[in-house]
Amino acid sequence: MPQPLPEDLACPFCGLACDDLRIEVRPDGLAASGGACARAQSAYRRVGASVADRPTAWIGGQAAALDAAIDHAATLIAGARRPLFAGLATDVLGMRGLMDLADERGALLDHMNAESKLRNLRTVQDQGWITTTLSEVRNRADLVVCFGSLAPGFPRFFERCVWVEDTLFAPDVEARQVVYIGPPVDLAAACSPAGRAPEWIDIPQARLAEAAALLRGLAADSLPASTAASSDLPVAALQALVTRLRAAHYGVIVWAAADLDWSNADLSIQALAGMIDTLNRATRCAGLPLGGSDGDFSADAVMLWQTGYPFRTSLASGTGHYDPVGQSTERVLAAGEADLLLWVSSFDPDRHPPPAGDCPVIALCCGGTPPLEGVAVQITVSTPGVDDAGYMFRADKVVTLPLRASMDRQLPSVAALARRWMTGQGAQAC
Image (cartoon, rainbow, N blue to C red):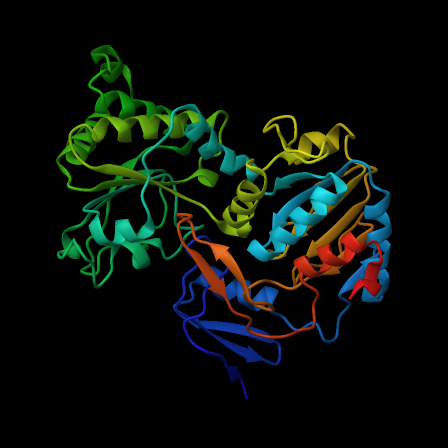
């Protein structure tokens, strides 16, 4: 018989961290129900699969005893002089352990989602921004504008934050307006409870950067007439949207930086932030940058409070050295500047370490990850919110939600492995 667990569990597989899930332990793994979206159901099924009849550690691609793999990894870490800790997909506790190990070994730290995260960070560094929280959207927003595609990464955003039953300051939820700017996607989740579809301004992905610049110019009344006349984008629809944003009581511009995947995309986010700043001279408007998948916001928060620096920071000199361009995982590995790659992916079995050349790789991967080629040591680690209790920052970075364990497969946690390797005694440390 399936073993039911307490209800209202928080999901660790996207930045919304929805906390209304029910999990059942079945012979073949976990099944998620309750509020679980399709993404969560798939993740729990894959990551929570039984490991009773399969290896959980490999050395050089060959199945090995866990203690032997831990010892071999300890030897590699002890001998490294330029280690790179990348991936970093873990929760707060796992990242704290990695930070301690990185401080001892003088490692460079870079998250698998750093490139998209830095698109937002550069905007904050260059000009600042006005942003809001999921709760504020839920309770106050009367006009929600989605810039780019949100559905794949945050399936329950509208259900949890827009089309809600109870709000504090927006009693007529059905009257909320939703506008989507971008290429065609499935907008079913954005429909109101009564079935009213969101408005859609059709702009190809390749032209969203231009649309962001147009919105900023229209909001500031600084767009030359010749530009409006010559553009083949729907300038009139964008102008009408700006007019509605000016009239809104609480407008919100929502984007996911991971979707804005083009050269210098941070300039487009700066344009959106500039538009929001201009609108606030006459009304109330805020941005909502969504993120938090693969534990990126949690890992970043730990780095910030312990070093004062975000991803792509090296601790080799005994203090933090931040270089968002020169210290990317891909560039460092391509240049042969690392002599060890410690890769951490405890949430997604499809996120594998990048090509590392002759650099030895230690891969700490979640359940469901197949044996990887070209990896010196691979260890299946526990997933926070599946095997272990833990903590994860939500997408708006103002709330840290507790994660509760759903099963016990006797897998080592990222934090426990980091503690072992800090002692220099391998598996004998516990």
